[in-house]
Image 1 (cartoon, rainbow, N blue to C red):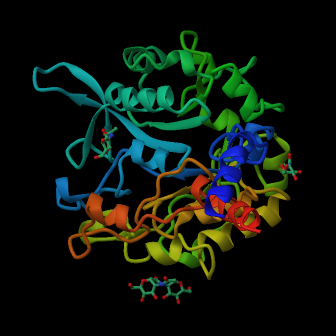
Image 2 (image 1 turned 180 degrees about the horizontal axis):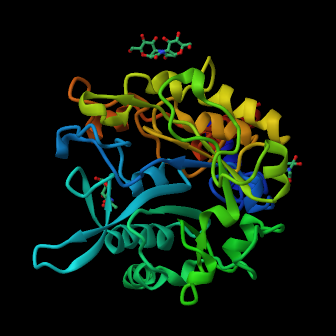
Length: 371
Ligand SMILES: *[C@@H]1O[C@H](CO)[C@@H](O)[C@H](O)[C@H]1NC(C)=O
Ligand SMILES: *[C@@H]1O[C@H](CO)[C@@H](O)[C@H](O)[C@H]1NC(C)=O
Ligand SMILES: *[C@@H]1O[C@H](CO)[C@@H](O)[C@H](O)[C@H]1NC(C)=O
Ligand SMILES: *[C@@H]1O[C@H](CO)[C@@H](O)[C@H](O)[C@H]1NC(C)=O
């Protein structure tokens, strides 16, 4: 009996492994459902100030906006990374372009090119993913200054370049097309006037292509969907009619001593929740109503909390995302530090794994074979 059922299974095994159900389908940004959707019509989860981390290595520096670094963010499903570029004097007096939070004395996350190299390696290792970078050009770096950093990181070849960089793009390619042409990096700079950029057409001026709601909010009741930047777009309707992508800012500051504004960690579980007043879920549904379509991106602090990805999956109608690494969805600070063991312990499998599919099938076959 047992022998017979095992033989039965062995006979069926090749069909099982190569059956269309189990054959690996291309997943784009973690789901096969997103491959044939335009880049403009996939909601990206954005990590606000992606490079500014608070963790054990800096005693949970309150200037940090995220608990996990940029490559960990990408592993977990974040597809938009924002940061600020500042001019920084290096130890030998030379000027370098660094990622700094407000000023380099407050938090200096190192050279832009070093950070870009990490993203380049991630793109090398994740061939079916499209990533967006949005850099705040705080000290007026020129196109060639920035291009130097991108060249240094050897990441330019991945860049997507629209045919016309001076106006919103009406027809963004699908994720599958961007993956096929291996132009899987979209870079926006706030700001870099197209007329001032003759050397690096892949560095796209943010406000030519994107508009945003107000980003400076202190209270969950303050979130809205109105176009705030660029400041010339008027109503929601007229902003949408320009064809720009809508970036929904959804994070809160709290005011500390001397009016210093820091990310509001205590409210993160409410702010990033899929449901409730002032939540990411509610705010994105509100903006979806206003614009008749989901935001192109939502930008959050502490992306792992909520978890924010749940609201984004809902906007994209994605269930059973594949290829993500799970991270803790908790607030992480000195009172609640996390180590790699904890985060593995907390790992939640999203969607059925191969084992979960094969195991019941194998059992079913054994069961049938036994009779
Ligand atoms: C975006 O994609 C969804 C799912 O395919 C589709 O239902 C919707 O009409 C699209 N919206 C736009 C504005 O392209
Ligand atoms: C992020 O952290 C992981 C784990 O600690 C590390 O392996 C990786 O190199 C880091 N990435 C960057 C860009 O620093
Ligand atoms: C947020 O706004 C509400 C309504 O205006 C107010 O009752 C509440 O005190 C505010 N919360 C904070 C933390 O300022
Ligand atoms: C958020 O965290 C606070 C403090 O830990 C807790 O009291 C509250 O119930 C949490 N709210 C949600 C929506 O998870």
